[in-house]
Length: 405
Ligand code: HEM
Image (cartoon, rainbow, N blue to C red; front, side, top):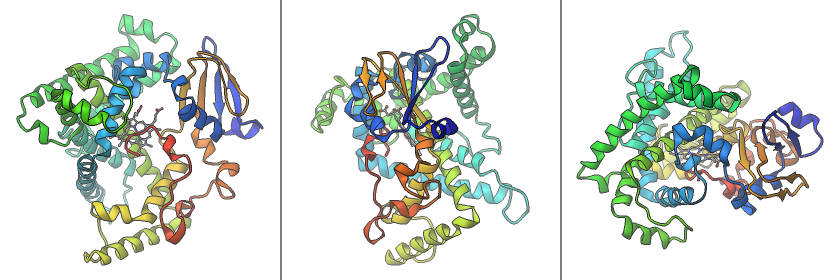
């Protein structure tokens, strides 16, 4: 795709896959803005996406369009903007980062010449963190060296075999006959469901539900107090959605969607950013992160180097720009697809017929000089720093659909 985007002079080109509608691949920022903002209602995820993910994700936020999406989006936007959840998420990630560090130090000690597989440690770190944030319970990812927690294994298998469906024209037949990858997928989903059903049933009995900060408890509490919460959330101006009651099945899918959305993306971005920082040529970036850390801690009267508390993180402009630069060059969602509901024309003149798909080549766009200027391919966090070294969000960031951004 990178080569195709380089060779092809235009900002969009077509790909034809037998038995599939035309796919328009694009590297135009105007086209992305058009699909994600201006004509948002005309570009849902679409039936292909929803069909392939339905067994794993049901009608959870990641796999929903229309009213089902709006209802969950409303609660998610409300909850993610609340300080309680933000602080809770920060505390969970901070606590587990200490555990991840001790895994790195003890299992394959830095003092020995053995290599540490940081990607694997990050996968365990985010699984454990999202487990606590999503369900309010440990998934056991730090208990042994192989992420052998059965939930983690089942979840990995389920996502792997769900992805297989996009390139397997006979997956529906295999599902009907319960053979091959579809048999494994069904078994993995059963395992995930049985774990989640138990957690949901236990949480119904929890007398402190309303005080709990994890997402499952928040959605359950919202559902329990549905009428007053509808008014509270509606007054924030979010559109659509209707009643905020959720059945146990809906709750299950909501949380599974959050696990999928938050786990690998976060592990992936940590891995790539660390990879960039470990390069000799980027050593200066590490020095600057440390310097900023020391300065902020000194101002706060803490001294030395170490983990920031929640307030200091928001003042870490350089660190934030490093994370953005890691995300820019190595986007955990490197391409994204939407499906046109009605005929449309993209800003670069591409004609998109109803049912055809538009794919953004996000990874390729990060390497384009016309978007990021000379040195687009370089790791340069300073591109996100504005006046007086303050972090400056890139233009159009609001196009983001991720509620945690
Ligand atoms: C580096 C980390 C992350 C990246 C790069 C990322 C990226 C994205 C992207 C690109 C989308 C839009 C997908 C689409 O509509 O086609 C998305 C949606 C979403 N993300 Fe994230 N995400 C990250 C972390 C998280 C975390 C930690 C959570 C939750 C705990 C989360 C929850 C969600 C949810 C619920 C959606 C669906 C939103 C909707 O459809 O309205 N994400 N994310």
